[in-house]
Length: 268
Image 1 (cartoon, rainbow, N blue to C red):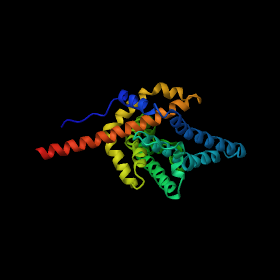
Image 2 (image 1 turned 60 degrees about the vertical axis):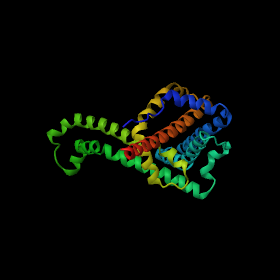
Image 3 (image 1 turned 45 degrees about the horizontal axis):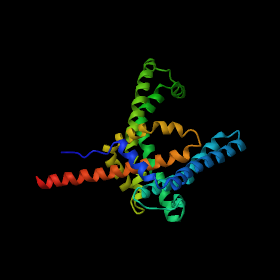
Image 4 (image 1 turned 45 degrees about the vertical axis):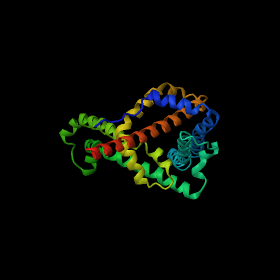
């Protein structure tokens, strides 16, 4: 069967430039706000670190909580804004706080965020489980706890441990990459079920993940430039818009291939 290809990174980037041409100020504001929220979370966590110098873990917990309950909904709001922008919708920059506008929307955002975190945690845990088991077996404290001597064969597990760690990381990256479209699918419809959104992301990403990785690589210079705070106003909109444009192309491409496959079956 002939498969329709996802547009190359050059096509995505040219579409992004055309889309941002008349929306640079609004897009810059919307793209910058999540980064400012991130900095706010880091500052608050830093204050807790100074207040509880003997309990540094507290600042880490505070930062994680703020990132989930404050930064993540704002980040989703930015993705939604750019997604709608690629569909010729002219939302106000304040729409970046869309998921804070009602209890229903905020709860839905939290469900989506926590659901995605849970799926990623399970995927990483399962992929790293063989490595974790070998790590426990090869650790001396478990034999001290059991009151037995360390078996001689344990010394040979170091190579196995390194191999399983590498395989686990690669497998985890592969599995997690299937969920990269979840945010775009999530913001499309306020009534979409979480399992439906994750299913669509998983199905579409089989063909689009490699194209997305290529798109990230093509923006590597901009990514390095973004480590300097000042250019974020210009680079952040490009990243958000590129994700939105790529996601739209990926979903359209998947539907086109699905329709083509059905048409071929009907013709035959």
